[in-house]
Length: 134
Image 1 (cartoon, helix red, strand yellow):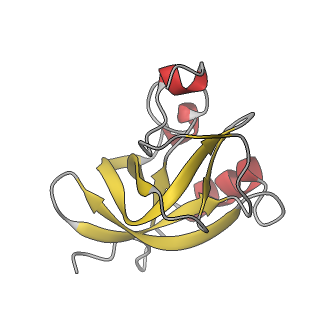
Image 2: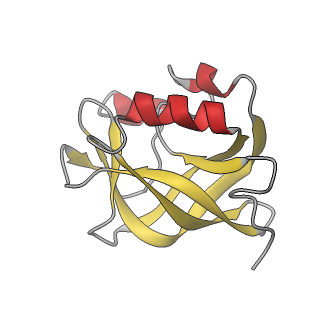
């Protein structure tokens, strides 16, 4: 396995963003001080749904989820937890992702505890997905 960029002694964490935290979406500003590590896919298959917001449900192996990985500090991870309602709404867990470069690392993802909304079989949330065009 590649470098464990999930957390090191300096309090840095790798976070996998698959929805509105990605570049070009409304909540991307949260990552303004974060380090972009690259585009990535989950190693394990999950299911991506879109309801009022995108969500990944871990209980159905449909597709590898497409997203972006950012390195964040402890303070930003806490702010992301508040945004995602962790642990009441979304649940933050560690998973393995593969960067576009081929490097594999562990990253935090926010899972939703149940399927809800419209399934996105491709596993990729895009602007057209949000509009119901996929």
